[in-house]
Length: 100
Image 1 (tube, one colour):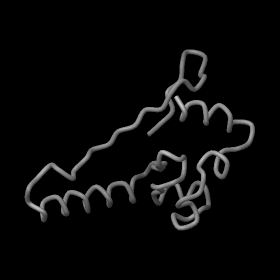
Image 2 (cartoon, helix red, strand yellow):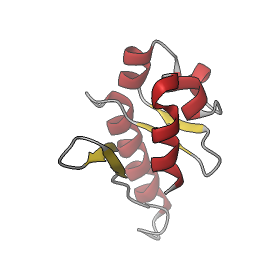
Image 3 (cartoon, helix red, strand yellow):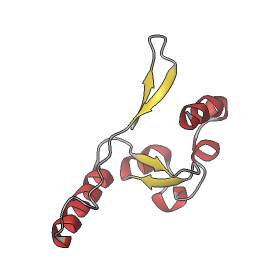
Image 4 (tube, rainbow, N blue to C red):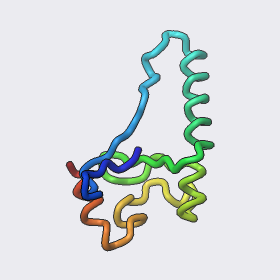
């Protein structure tokens, strides 16, 4: 996921990529293997990857995000993303993007 910006560099949205693998195969082993492969890709990516649930709480936090922020996955999980990890002067605009 990354911010989407207009010509003036204002945040106007978020761009994300996801793949639902739960129904992709009737073979449970194949689904489990794909899920494990995806988990490894996310965890070891050379870019920060994080996610939030519908309440704005962290539900994904890869190794690079932990390295950059100094917060471990365990410390970040279930914490409110905006109020905990976004600097105060940006919280309103980030929250607006997420709300929209």
